[in-house]
Length: 323
Image 1 (cartoon, helix red, strand yellow):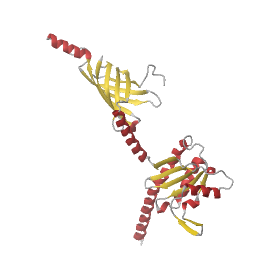
Image 2 (cartoon, helix red, strand yellow; image 1 turned 60 degrees about the vertical axis):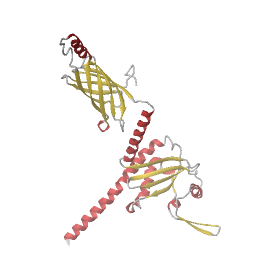
Image 3 (cartoon, one colour; image 1 turned 45 degrees about the horizontal axis):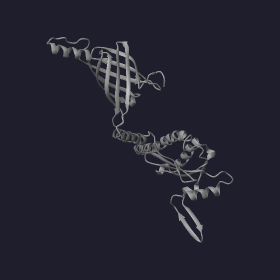
Image 4 (cartoon, helix red, strand yellow; image 1 turned 135 degrees about the vertical axis):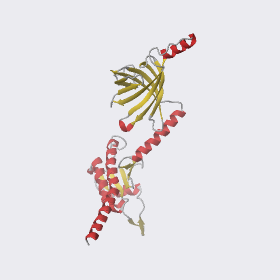
């Protein structure tokens, strides 16, 4: 008997945990919806009140009772309860009697019907200006807000707890935009001026192009003034968004004085060797952007044994202190 009770209790615990796991994405998606609707009040939804809640369709049996209430609570936190109306007739099967006929209607209510229902139930209040549909999905929720005046779609979006769908859509959009940009012959070019001053010096300027499926790759040319002295070369960097857009990469720089000296020694038959720096210098570079500025904390380490910490100026103009 005790074993049976333990097994039954474990089964109920697992069942409740599974049910909660299915509801958690809905709860998180409703929170994301509330956050996203706030800025929309200053944009496409500015002044669009009152609103009629026409649909709040749950996707699971266990959320059938709780989902409509959760939707109303979430929308009330955005628009205010006084600006919301519930169209109960729109969410149930409707039976109409007209011209001696009995009509059973279970399909989605039309905008004309919503306006007619609102006119019968609002009394002396102002007519509703928009209708809202919120449906639960396996990953979260979907929302549509449509104007009752002209049928214009004012707002439509899908939400999940982590906004994964929006991230995927953003990646596809960025990839398409990058391909179109390159087909037009345009480029995303950046200028970095690096100044590492302690304990060793490294001063250089990079001109790089941004590319890749997520525009996280940077490659181009560099000109070094210190470490090495007067050198030119190639650079490659990778942006890491998860680390606050940390940029990590390296420079491979040719020392112009040493290259010229080697060419001269070859022409005269002598041996000059490394004049100031080795012919090739590799430099590890890390830039950590400072939020809301055009500056980044800079760390460099070269094969010449020079390590420095300083500041990198990113995409600066003639006066980098100005925004």
